[in-house]
Length: 257
Image 1 (cartoon, rainbow, N blue to C red):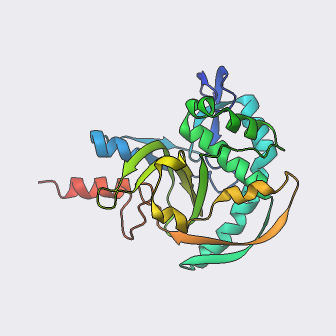
Image 2 (image 1 turned 180 degrees about the vertical axis):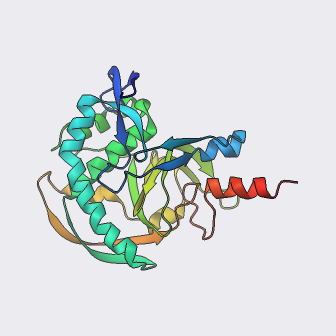
Image 3 (image 1 turned 90 degrees about the vertical axis):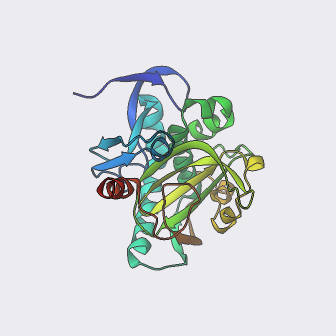
C-alpha cells in the first residue's frame, strides 16, 4: 500500500497529498536501494540516522499534478542527457571532459530546477514565484536573476540531497548560500543568492543558465566542458579522498576508545 504524506507541494504551493519525487528522475539511473545520510545533522548534532530508500533517492514533495506534468514535460529529456553523460563517466576520463551531447537544453534545465524545488522545500517557490512559472509553463524563459545553477561530473559515485544552507571559508572569506543534489554521473549546485556567494571554485563549473536561450522544442548538439570532481558531503569541497558520511561513521566507531 502506497504511503500517504500530506503537505505543501514544493512547486505549486497547494496543500494536498504528496507523491514521491525521484531526485533525479528514476529513469536517470536513480532506482537502486541506498542509504541517505544527513551530513549537517551528523556534523552539528552527531545524528547518525539515515533514510533507507528502496527505489532511489527522493522525497515526498510534489502533488500528483506537478509530479506528472514536470515528469512528462522534462523527465525523458533529462534521462537522455544523463545517459550520454554516463557513457563519459564510465570512461574514467579526468579533468575537464569536453565532449558532444545531443539534447534539449531548456528541458534539461527545467528538470534540474524541478529537482531543486523538492530539495529546497516549498518556501523556495513561495519566495521565488518566477520559479513556479518557469516550471509550470514549458515555454517560459524568465528566471530569477539572483539564482544560478552549476554542474559537474562526479569522479566517485555518490548520492546526496542537501537543501539550502550557508557556509563561509574562514581562511579566504569566501561565502556560499545554496544547495546541491547529486547522483552518478552528475551533481548540480544551486546558488540561491549570487550576492551572498563568492566561492571562486564555482567559476570552474559550467552554468546551466546558458540553456535559457533555447526553446522547449530545440534539440541541439553541443560540446559541453564539464569538470570531473569528487562529490563530497560538504558542498563545494572538492578535495580528493574525503570519505562519505557512512564510511566516516564506521571509522569513528571502529577507532573509538
